[in-house]
Image (cartoon, rainbow over all chains, first blue to last red; front, side):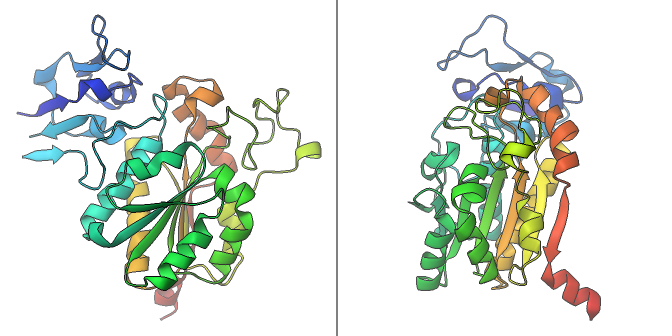
Amino acid sequence: MAKLTFKSDDCKGCGLCVDACPKKVLALSKDKINKKGHHPIEAVKPDDCIGCAFCATMCPDCIITVER
Amino acid sequence: MVVFEKPKSLTDVSMHYCPGCTHGIIHRLVAEVIDELGIEGKTIGIAPVGCSVLAYNYFRCDMIEAAHGRAPAVATGVKRSLPENIVFTYQGDGDLASIGTAETVHAAARNENITIIFINNAIYGMTGGQMAPTSLPGQVTQTSPYGRDVTQCGYPVKVCEMLSQLDGPEYLERVTVNNVKNIRNAKRAIKKAFQNQVEGKGFSLVEVLSSCPTNWGMTPQKALEWIDEKMIPYYPLGVYKDRSANKEAKA
């Protein structure tokens, strides 16, 4: 099973990874705010992740690590 | 098994770029290529002036900060004095296509054995969104509020097309990073540009069409669509010069 880890404090909430995900696994957090003052990304459907790493490829800040 | 992680050639410093700016993606591609070619210890980067002026904080290799537009001249000096090292410059359009045009054209004409990563986002990002030499006709910027008027401001500079007329350069390609497929293609081009230098082939320049959500006044998503809709029709993607490929074709 694929596993995603986020370096949430570096997330700028641009949401490019959300659009890149073919399985709609990711969403911007609605209640959390990180050190930079953005709503960081989180996995809302982690079990659907197929580990394609499209999200990490799109992320400008390298905050996503993908394991499979 | 780790499928994707931050490349070793990037430091742990959090980048200062705006949310959704594709500079971060291109930094990562360069770092991945440095990792893959195993040239981390002998690579020297030349940082420009512009948004990526702080690039020396992000790459885990020796970096030199050049005066505005002079990165190809500095790279020439470094490469000629340290020919065993791999020298790359990372420049924006205000740096390379405006104030540094002379340095760029002559480095290409001399076929200096350096690699240039040229980021074209059609605007001056760091200074607040003024019209750049690469701004599209009709594009609204801080200094062209009614759209770029080509009768007054002239036409955009197409760097790859311009340099492809010279006999000097080894390899010129234009790519973009607005989706996963294009990012993979961009990485292939950047890798080839570094590989050319390792093999001593000569001047390699990769132009990357990039986005500037903040100064274009768009969401990051809209900005990537704008690249597809407006920039690619004016700046067609593709290989503009590849001497080694031509030699193979003739042989």
